[in-house]
Amino acid sequence: MEARKTPWLTLVVVVVVLAGAFLYYQQFNNYRLERETLAQEEQALTAAQTRLAAVKKLQEQRDQLEADLELLTQLLPDQAGEDKLLVDLQSGADQAKMDFLQVRFSDRVTNQGYVGMPMQLQLNGTYHELLYFLDYLEFYDRALRIDELRVDESEENGLSINIRASAFYAADATSAAE
Image 1 (cartoon, rainbow, N blue to C red):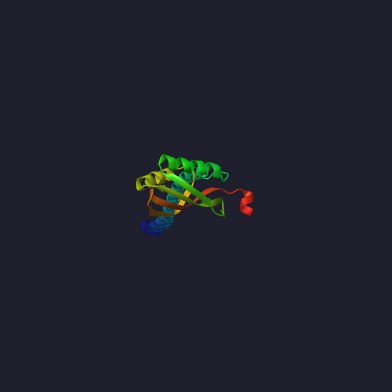
Image 2 (tube, rainbow, N blue to C red):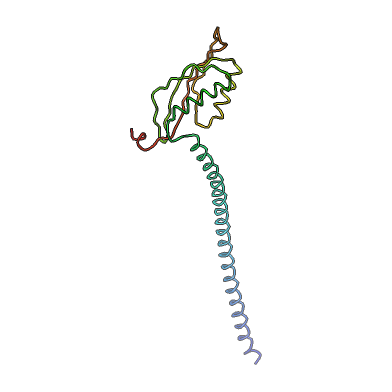
């Protein structure tokens, strides 16, 4: 009877070993698949973190760009306002104790979103007065660009100063179409 039990016992052991090997193989495949899934999820997490950092950077840029846009909107009036510009330039020259001799406007230059008003200013004064006037222009509440600054010696009043500059204002739909 012992001899009869041995083949059955061997068969049971073989079945148990095969079942164990099959279960081990299944677990190993599941483990490998889970590691691949984990690697993919880690890559997706890294990509999401990169996108999040980019979005945060864009948010910071957006805030800065909105502040810049607000400042530019303040610096670009809706209309040319030559009369106010002339009064302000005269006021700046007076504050700097300069002689404001002449201003000549040239043809306007229309660009996308704004119009430039080229002008030439003629002033007399000293070097330090010129610096005060330039400081005034730097902090002026309107967009100005100095294209050329020419200083010549004048026999009567120190320095003869010629400034070629442009003032800007926002272009409306009608002036942009022209």
